[in-house]
Length: 338
Image (cartoon, rainbow, N blue to C red):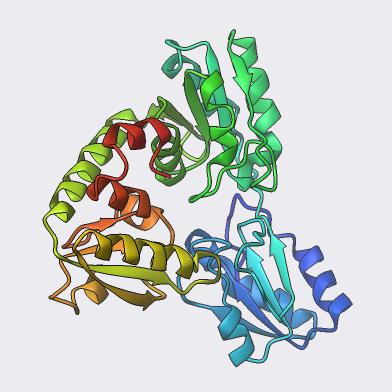
């Protein structure tokens, strides 16, 4: 029996076993994001206890856009069990049933949200967002802010599973209330989603981190990122040869967008070649020395993530149109990068 790992996330073991028994699955592929992978062996034991063979997907998992559909068919599994995200429909055409477990967090958000009030002191109208791990506590966060005199807005644009929920690549809920608010509060751990929120709305953004029980502004980091993006665009303007990346992950596959931007580049006197990739890394792109800059049509956060490092410019589609002077830089700043 595997040792219990202390975790603030709900693994819903009873439901996991019930889903397997109900479907009569005999072989199950278990997929976990990086923060939950340590629980893989224990959850595999639960699957085995339901009389199914468990296979853990050890590849990186970045979200519900990154489902192991081809792997599931190759391994001839009867079910994919995916932890940590809500389902998305775009690009998800699986012949293998997928069961999603949201991995809700039990971490208490109250102290971190209370601390965020001081960080939000300059603004009265606040947009409130979080990930699915804390979505069940969003009303609690709202009440704390309202008791401090804030007017709170929670967007419901219909792209995410829940009002106020943001994804790493989709901030539609936040954008739907952006014109009404002066700043945003993101409840959750780490800087990744908060940085995306700030770059999507271009509004001041504060993080209330319940795991570290602290609150902090993301503005300085976002400012550095914006300056970096302008430098990348400026460098790409000099390039003659471009590689247009087609993402092969199910929720990131946008071949029509890739074909359109290839045509736009060529119409502006650039050379462009299409590259199909599953994992977009610097080491892979360095294998093409004749290519001077890249356009990424897959997840926009690949180029915008503060931890990304590429030796050559890697632009989003909209940034490429700025480089081609089809979109103004000022419009990109106003409308957001994500």
